[in-house]
Image (cartoon, rainbow, N blue to C red):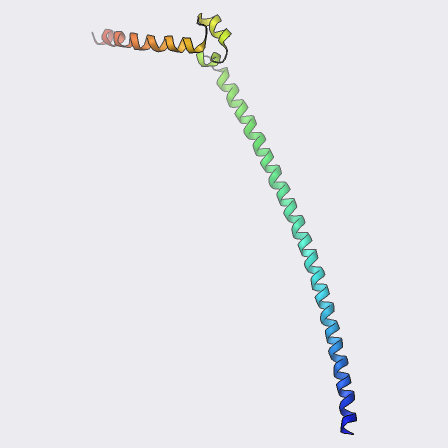
Length: 124
């Protein structure tokens, strides 16, 4: 009779353990689903952040290009020989020298020749 009393108790324990196992499996499934959802949300947020970073980078590059162009235009707008350094036709028109290089060589020779003369004139 003692065996009869222990069997329903063992059967009940097995049933209870099976129910607990089923509950734990359900919790595990829910945790896995929540993890998948969190991963997807994190990936979406990372993609949004990368898009913002790329947009900011593109805007910065555009600004750099715009300012570089403005600086080049400002440099070209200054009047001087350097303004025409890439335009041999203008150099020939304004100076008579065939190229900018010829003009700079002549200028250098003049500086070397006339500097001692001007120095002597100022001192004497």
